[in-house]
Length: 111
Image (cartoon, rainbow, N blue to C red; front, side, top):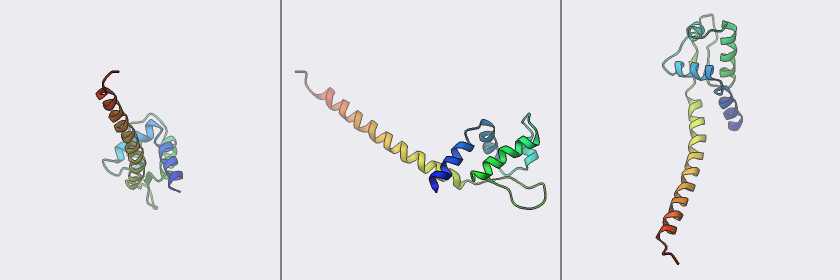
């Protein structure tokens, strides 16, 4: 299940407009109209972007009348961070082993 969520999150964040919306929401909740202000697109297009972010679990909007604030779900970043950190540690371990091997090779006398 976490892998499917991770796939949806990365796919949702693949779009620069959605990444920008997420960056703006990191500063605080905003209405759809506030989120739409800097973009040269229809409100319908903004809603489509938000729907992708909602389906990925990146943002939520409470039920109720308009205007409803869009809220960034920060726990999704914990999921992404865990995945990235796990792979970063593995890569760093490989580089440390390579560095050790290279240092060992440099320390060996020429034959």
